[in-house]
Length: 605
Image (cartoon, rainbow, N blue to C red; front, side):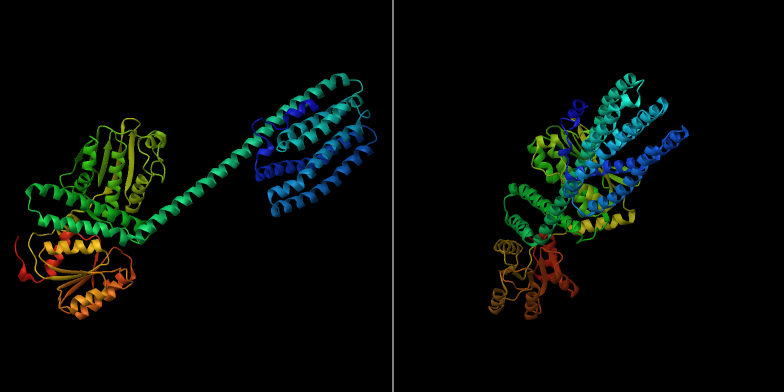
């Protein structure tokens, strides 16, 4: 028996009881303990029919009855002990509970096995063959049941089985004095069979607990990674929102400088290049604004505003943004519009960000061939599509590409610069707008990503056209007048001065309140005053603007800021002051100055 049991202790060369965590071992201990308590509970009731049968045979049943009463007493003690066990499991950590109760449960299993062997000793040589055979068969059934349910802690089952069935096997010559040579081989073969069955059951329990452990660990790792990703995304959004003023400054200055250079340029050959540069800067500005505004939306700082948006101009603008990259990589970039028909109900910032991300994703993973940006009607909706001839996406990964930080393996081989957020942002933007999105792809042949949005009403089309016209208002006339600009960034002041001078406006650009009042004291009389909201000196731009306008009541004034949710800006707007946000569109600024400065002084270029 010992030789058959030894190799089974670990149950598996690769997985042992000790390999499990303390929580896993404690769970297996719970299973074994529960089975032991249940087994001890039913044994006295199993013995009672044998007591009655022995009495009916006109034999002395006192020994068997005493044995049964002893088991009832053991049952009461085991029940009290089980209550204490549950209390300890509730208050002790798993490792402490195992250290305290493992020896107890092993002794309990050994005692239970010896008790069953004692039952055979009580009846051995004193009952008919049929009585002894039925008792052995009952004990064999009990062994089989325990081989499954008591095997989670294999040491406990071995102690129980070796004591119980080993005792029965040794007592076989006394229990079956006339047939022991037939029964003994059956008992020995049963030992081998039960050990094999119990080892399989034990291995199953170990694997299930290990699998559950791994699942919990993976779930915990996923939860932790998700929390870290969400924290990183929140930190990024918070950083972009908080640092918006400083991040917008160089873009703000760049737009002014390009407009100033365009005004001063006298070389016709440079005009197409300057126009492309101006359009590129405008695209960068719009994309930059979209990024910052998306961060605000993710933080809940700005509501989603659905309005009619024309898709064709937006697609043309995005094509301009990516055309140079496509040409440099010899990738054909085509646009198939709707001839001005596609008008959707969407948030323009979120829609643009989604379209830009889809185009960027298509170009990134297309090494040859082309990319097509198209729009088509789908019932009461318009569907924006981006087709590419890139690497494609495996079917198993197609539902995961919209998850944050997920990138297919082939994507890493082509470009390791991404972070797996582009398509996640598309999915988030679509959810915020109430739009649907999806993809069709074949690995190695390319992909089609689409974004489906509800069509805007015909009455809204006129409003969208009017808004589009208003955004392109500008002029090539010279203005007359004077402006005072307060901004603490030297590059921004230089850009202001260059642009205003190119428009024919006298400009004084200063960095602080003391310099502003010094300019006024020297006799400078501004027609318009523009004051940055955040100044490095710690001064309040709003309070400074109020003081300057009080000093110059004939002047018009406006606040300028790269922030959106500043209390000072909110107060300024509530009190009726004009608030402009960086980066300013030079054409929009020209239109504003056309209204603020004296009208009689305008000349044509």
